[in-house]
Length: 155
Image (cartoon, rainbow, N blue to C red; front, side, top):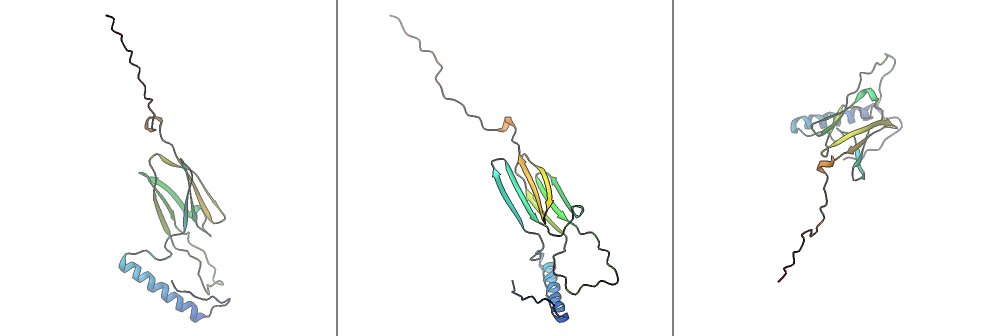
């Protein structure tokens, strides 16, 4: 990853130069099948207790209508698809460095896990995952005991 200094007013040459590198990165990614360096947002997975997990995904600038959460066959998929922007003729971008690409994240959920809540606040999509193990599948302790009666022999 290259270190690049930022100026308050990037020159036209700087933005064209950086755009060329972005295009080269996309081209190599298409040829090799690799994902782009910043193709998916950052995320955290936290275990609260034995049956509760929290997944937090960094999605600054995304609206609820642009995000989709789906569970299918034990897989959780979070995807984002940007809505088309309506720009007026008076506005034009000089530099656009905020990540705006569509994305898709996939997670394998533990058996019997369900997403119980999803919220979007301050650029973080937070998912609460609860794992409910049925009573029939929970481990059971079996006491060891000797319940046999001893018969005495009379002579």
